Image 1 (cartoon, rainbow, N blue to C red):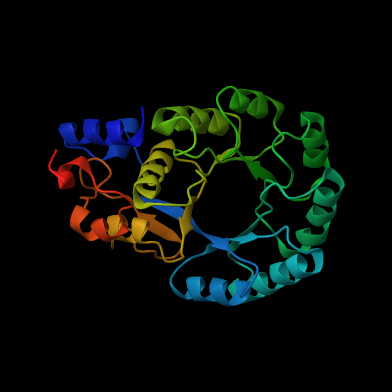
Image 2 (image 1 turned 120 degrees about the horizontal axis):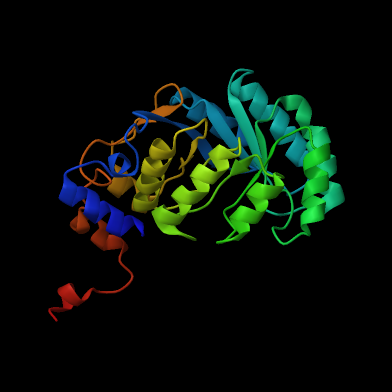
Length: 269
């Protein structure tokens, strides 16, 4: 069932969505500031740290020297006590993925996301998992039974299904529970609008575990006009929304300037 249907069911029950998924949802959820781009990476991370973030994810896979310089600069900017992750967006060949893992490991990285193409033979993933000093993460580009295969093999230690790409809340909760049962983490991938962010927040709060919620910190009206001030960051966490369903009320008037076509309602049909 997708976010809209779960939201509707929870609203009818008068409950936050997470309370429909778990008897003991987390009241606060850890977040990571995501989408830190290669230009101005340290400055961007430092600004997010000042806003209360305590976990950060840097994009790499552009140029080896620049990538490693950015890893070092971001770690220096956020200090030694914050969680720090890197995301290669499937950019490396197996030998280059291994090289980067060893080169970047001195900066105490929590995970190394999508270092290789998701369709790289599983044996190559197994080899990288055995030799990498950094835990491997992935899942936003897996589907259906792929998750069972990968969880059984154990190459990934962090699973990141995306509610908007596959499975909705129902499918992603199955993955979350299977990953946690296998001793791995569930960290939902989300990089987009407010509905996806809030649905992922509730799924993680219900699943529990040590995972963090991805939080895009770039300007995005599709997120900001839906989430508003519901998710203030404090010491690396945000509160679970407590209103019915996802905990937000859509202001369609505020969103109208961003419409790409007129709705049937606006056309009077």
